[in-house]
Image 1 (cartoon, rainbow, N blue to C red):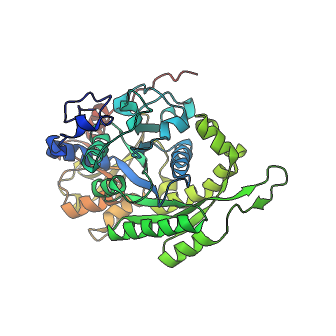
Image 2: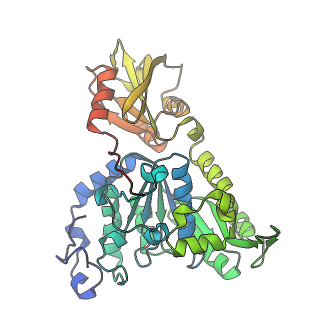
Image 3: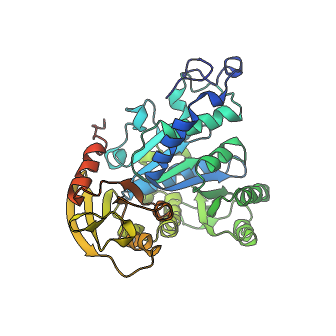
Length: 413
């Protein structure tokens, strides 16, 4: 990461209010940083901001567990901890020093090593027990650095763990990632639901799409008889969601195993079979996959699919007028399948929808209008500019050569 604008040691930046008092967030290179952020976001299909109205509702547990569940299904997932005053993500996962900070890569089990990237302010702190004493502009700058300087690579999902409430960090995420979707976590108590209504209002005010409301700690399932025992009054979260006209995604039971595993940094070792919490999370994940991308089931996790408009064996000069599209399926940096299919009769705006239905992840095109590019990006399809004089095969191989998959590193047992 770049140095603190005040000149302070990045390892201690934020722990001394005097050293940070002269920080000017405008000193960083906004123009180049903005371009890097845009480049990063184009490689990330879906961004999920996990937030809550108040603390103590298990928001971080939901965010971390959601990232784990998606990664275990084979999706490429980034987990970004922007709870700058109370970061817990690394501790829950039992992660300490990164193997590769710039690629947000940690020593993870083999089934997660290639699929999960994690970043948190804790990796920049010499003493993780020190308080971060920052004002809003510095928080905004760090969040932008997480997006502009960390080499996330192509991701299916970026899960963002925000602090409780509607303060600087959620606002910065909404400003930097306007296409993000909010997932709001609550508990059944009325005091929590009152704050959730503020979170819903916050999202509506800034036009942040709300995926839905999740009720955590909805009850306790007896490990002996399996009976569900309510810990608080029931029915509040569904009623709140209905009144606000947002989806209610489901209930997650209080699970002592999750609490213990998170405290010991062993959440990563907990399986769905052992945890009522993870069992309750499964239908919520299923719903999110269907809502965010109805074609997710047709996009095999970890596989890239390139589409190139072609005429006479070369890249077509005009995207919307190409007679055919060449499709390339890529796995582990190598082309495993290739075909050419005719472009169906269409209105110009219909091609992005057709490509999404095909499970396309990348489009390489010569001439592409701003509207078409926006439609493709909105559907999570990365757009790459190519030379109309080149063959589709050469264009795909050139892209793969310049954008190799991250090298596999041996994860220690």
